[in-house]
Amino acid sequence: MTNVQKNRLKDQLFKFWGIACTLIGLVLLVIFIGGILIDGLSRIDWAFITDLPSRKAEKSGIWTPLMGSVWILVLTAIISFPISVAAGVYLEEYAKKNRLSALLEINISNLAGVPSIIYGLLGLEVFVRIMNLGASVLAGALTLSLLILPIIIVATREAIKAVPGSIRDASYALGASKWQTIWNQVLPASSGGILTGVILALSRAVGEAAPLIIVGALAYVPFAPQGPLDQFSVLPIQIFNWISRPQQGFIDNAAAAIIILLLITFIMNGIAVYFRNKWQKKLQ
Amino acid sequence: MRKIREFIIEKTLLSSALITVAVTVGIILVLAVEAFSFFREVSIFDFFTDTEWTPLFTKKHYGILPLLTGTLLTTFIAISVALPIGLSISIYLSEYAPRSFRKTIKPLLELLAAVPTVVYGFFALVVVTPFLQQFIPSLSGFNSLSAGIVMGIMIIPFVSSLSEDALFAVPKALREASYGMGATRLQTAFKVVVPAASSGIIVSIILAISRAIGETMIVAIAAGQQPRLTLDPTVPVETITAYIVQVSLGDVQHGSLEYKTIFAAGITLFALTFLLNTLSFQIRKKFRQKYD
Image (cartoon, rainbow over all chains, first blue to last red; front, side, top):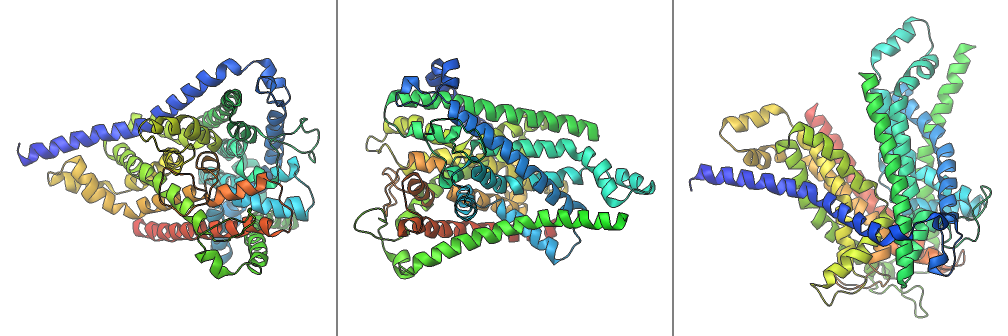
C-alpha cells in the first residue's frame, strides 16, 4: 500500500468512527428508554396517576408529586420570567460598555456554571431559614427561579440580538421613545426566541431533584399542595425515593414515573423547538 | 414626563439585572458564613489532610479528601467517556458530515442533555451496573464506574456542541490551503483545524469537567454513600454532592456541626467549579480576540 492509499484508508476509517460516535449516545438512550418502557408501561393506568402515595408498591400513585411538579412549574415561571427578561433587555438594550456591564456579564456566565446543588444550599439558608418559608412550594420555586435565571437571560439576549436594526430605526424615526420601541417593536419581534428559552429553562426545572432535596422537599407527602406555603414533593424526588428501595415493585413504579417525567420533558422540548422554528421563519 | 418614565423603567430593568449579582453575593455569603463557623470547630488542616470523613458516626472525622477523590474519580471516568466520543462527533460533524445530517442530528444530541439526571441515575443503577457485573463479577452494586460512564454519556453534547462551534468557526481558507497541499480530510482536521480551534475545544472540556464535578443525582443514586479514599472504580464511593444529598434526606438539626458540614463541603465544590468556570471564561475572552 502506498502512503496515499494508507492516508485515504485512514480518512475513510475515521468517517465510520465519527458516525459510530455520533450514534452511540443516541442508540444507548433508545435502549435505556426502551428498557424503561418495558418495565414501566404495564404499571401506568389512570389509578397510578391519581392515587396518593402508599407503603405498598402496587397501591402507590404519583398524584402528590405530579401536583407538586405542576405547582413548582407554574410558580417558577411566574417568578423567573419577568426578572430574567427584564435583566436580558437591560443588558442588551441599555447597558453601556463599562465596568458594570462587564461585571454583570462575567457574573451571569459564572452563575450558569454553578452546580444546581449550590442553589439548593442558598435556598435552604435564605428562603427556608431567613425568610422563614419552611420547606414549602414557594421556597422550592424561588430556588429554582434563581437556578434558571441565567438560562433565560442568555436566551433573551440572543433573541433580542436577532431583531433587525431596521425595525428599531423605523420606530425611532416615527418619534417613539426607547422604551416604546422596546415594548412595541423589539419584544414582540423577539418573543418567539424568548419563549423558546423560557420553555427550555422550565423543562430543566421540572427535571431538577437535587436543589429541592436540599431545600427540604419530602419523599413522602400525604396530600397534594393546596397553596404556595404547603409541603410538597416532585416527580424526580419520588423517582429517586422509589429507586432507593430494594423491592422490584418500587423499581417498576420508578420506571413508570420516569415515563411520565420524560413525556413532560420531551413535550416541553418539542414545543420549544416548534416555537423556535416558527419564529426563525418569521424573522427571515 | 416622558423622560421620568423612561428613567424609572431603565432603573427597574437595571435592578432586575443586579439581582443576578445579589445571587452570587448571596451564594458566597451563605457558604462562607456557615463554613466559617464550621472551621471554628474543625481545624482547616484536619479538613484537608484527614483521610476519613465520618461526621455522621460516633467517632467523627472531618477529612474532605475521601469526598474529593470520589468526586474526581467519577469525573475522570465521565470525561474519559465523553472526551473521545464528543470530540470525534464534533470533528465528524464539522469536517465530514453533509449539512442536512448535521442539522438533524444536533438537536437530537442536545436531547441527551435534556433528560433529567435522576433518569440517568436509574440507568446507571438498574441497567449499566448489572450489565457490567457480567464482565466484572467483583463489581459492587454501587460503584463509581457505572455512575461515571453514564455521566459521560450525559455530557457528550456539552463537549461535542461547543467544540463543533469552535471547529466550524475556523476560516475556510485554512482548510483549503491544507487540501491544496494534498492533505486528506483527516489530516486537515487533526493538523490544521483542531489546532486552530484548540482554545474553544479546551473551553468545552473545562465546562464539561465543571458540569461533571457538580452533577448530583447520578452519583447519589449509583455511586453509593461510603466516603473512602480510593481510586478503585469498582467499589462504592461518595462524592461531595452525594454527601450533601445524604445529609439533607436525614434529620439534621439546624445549627449543629453536621448541618454545617454540608456548607463546608458545598464551599469546596463551589470553589472547584468557580475556578474552572473563571478559567474557561478567560480562555474564551482571549479566543474571541484572536478571531475578531
